Image 1 (cartoon, rainbow, N blue to C red):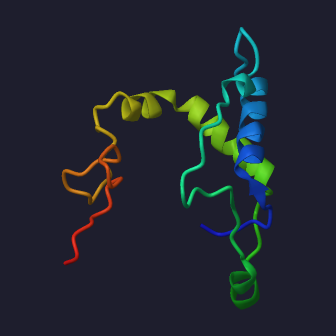
Image 2 (image 1 turned 90 degrees about the vertical axis):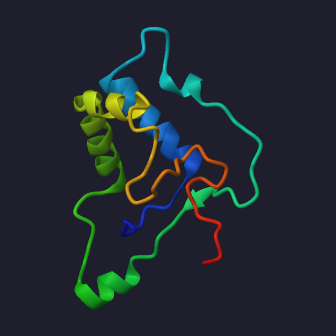
Amino acid sequence: MIGGESERTNLQVIREICGVLNELSPMPEGGFEKLITFVPDRPGHDRRYAIDPSKIKRDLGWKPSRNFSDGLRETVEWYLKNREWSEEILSQKYKLSRIGMGNRTLNDPNHGISTDSK
């Protein structure tokens, strides 16, 4: 992942996703923001994500090809157009397993992270 110089809090990102969904696939009984629920913070829970792209910009002349909002909209549009793909993933057919994780799943207590000291 390369940063696009558009730092946002998690809540700002989810509200922007809700806004795009409200526009592209409105809920009959109101907006998607009403589905946001708050849970107690967990130790180490990220409140925001920020990636500094200065090195790749300096060394390779990289620059973002689109801004955050446009990229987010494109992502939401892709998921809406490819619902069969996401429904198959969520159907538990894959048991939320990740490639290369053997029999571990994202539902296991270690979130698929090996705790072996090997």
